[in-house]
Length: 426
Image (cartoon, rainbow, N blue to C red):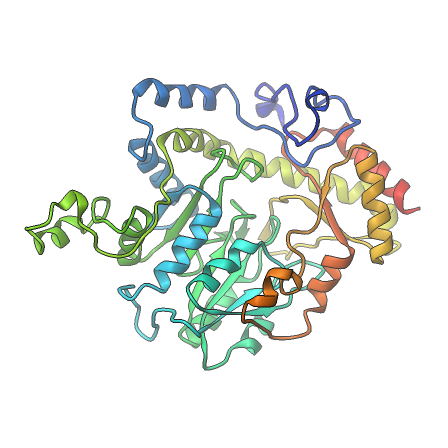
């Protein structure tokens, strides 16, 4: 199944270790990293072409990548930015912008409004909403799937709620279709953070395209990489144009409607005409050129990740069938792309013992993202509300960990991981 990828397989791991450790090859099963370098000869050549061109800021390569990405996910508009976190920042601030083009029944997010968010998430899903003055309302997840549940989201809605922000966690998908229906029924913005689930589908539709805004990440360790980078998608023409201005300082230069706006201010040079507040979140042609090649590999990468996940599940069956270890489950409507391999142990002590055993054996691990973010110390000085007791997120935080499922993982790697896990739990 990996035949089409083998020739591009990098010679060395990418992980944070000593210089001597970094020279270990992928055939050395004494170290199994979370991820490896997936950049091959074509990506290097594409990057070199940009360097040779002399034009390296946001230009034609970014525009081409945006068009190809929008076509891949099935969105009208895609805007490339410099990270997935920036994608969330841009999307949240667009929805809070006083000149946000508001569909009927909705309103811009204003200070004091509540935004429903997952307790199990990455920090920069939440911080942008905090930074616009909104109050995060944390909703629990199902520890079996790691995903938010629509019923819990619906129960958390009050007359202060302005938006629902969800995360498709670690290569799975929450029920975005049901959540979209809830958002519509209550006249709420629907924001999908898909940074961990690029290429994952729910009922044949790409995650990130159910809501008003979807976001993605191309960090080095994600499903595809531009080294650093992200994308925002939307089907709303006017919202996309506002975000084009906000992405680059607030000026009109990149807006589709920029000429019309500039015609109203003939006394101001249109090159430096500022229509709104903004940031500098632009990516570069160098990153985009790499992304265009990586996007062509995405389906193969995700197929490989699914294969790794299925083989790990089979190899761990002797202990999962005895409930010694709980592995992540996927809804039957979801075509997943495991970002990692999250597991939940029977207790914190068992998790800590297993984690230490795996790390000592060279199997790199991580906590399951931020765990229950409401328990992180940053939240002690941020106004927020917990919609329920967050027992699922607590269990994941206290008893969970994950290891890698990168697309170049070998059968030897999988066997080694499973052997060390079973060894550490029995």
